[in-house]
Image (tube, rainbow, N blue to C red; front, side):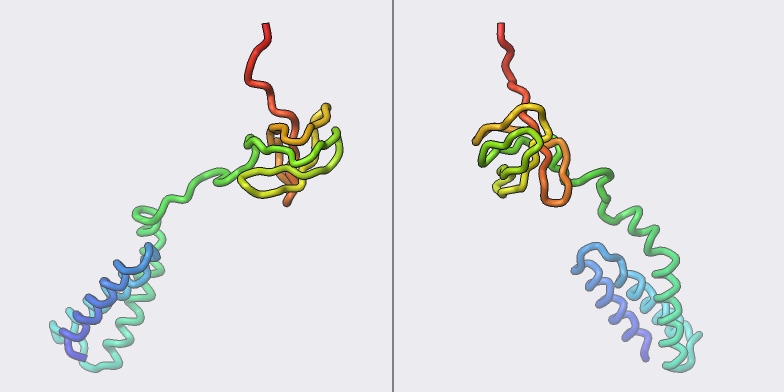
Length: 150
């Protein structure tokens, strides 16, 4: 393949990298195509099979050696800890729930199975604090009243 065809392939692969969301794969293939094109321009490569073999080796090698480093430096940062926890949220009971009993509560617009883990009964429409979540069951107790009495 002519050197300029490798350059066009490299440019197309780098453009494809910019059009895809942050995987950092095509950048190494594009750089490898540019490298093979430069070797062809300098007369180092003598046959098409050698060019394709070098392209494959360069692409696999650079991806293996450098992709993780590039991802760590420029990739999306992953949040640490729990991303979306319901613990500490306020749910509203859909029915009365006695201590140690199971009922229904609403949280974030969805109806959940709720277990009253507190020591007092909950009335319908009462605001409750989510203590923990086990599967699809909320463990709730009465929310503290925000006001103080004199």
